[in-house]
Image (cartoon, rainbow, N blue to C red; front, side, top):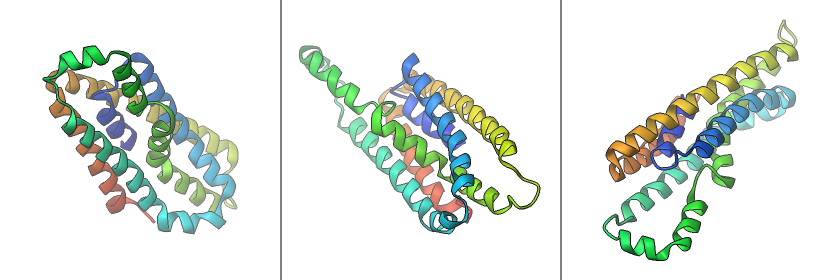
Length: 190
């Protein structure tokens, strides 16, 4: 659900076919890899991540939400002629701010999947019982596919909201990211 919420918030403004693919692919891949990594590294890191993971995830997602909120509030839709004149500069500035590219995408993917890393840690603690790595790969694949689908649904919801409500939806999307960040602090299971 975190992947869906974040993708919906991002999809308000960034919702082209490549952006949809990047969001769905990276959210799913991250959700797949994190339990596997957690399982492999197990006990030594589990307690440390449980202590600080929710703060790291919350800070990363809130930071992006605040950045998006500032950009949405500062945009001036009445100055479209200036945007046309600026041409290539505006396109390049848009590409640099696109959260479905580069470090922003990595941060979003990792921040929404830190809880899956903790799940992998906890599974490694139970490895002595009936749980084994092939079973983890099956579970992680299902988790990744569901996260990809949820991200794709989320970005499509965001796209519809962005088309219908424009700048208001951009501000709403930024606020959703900030709320999701806050939910990490409240709902994170230790």
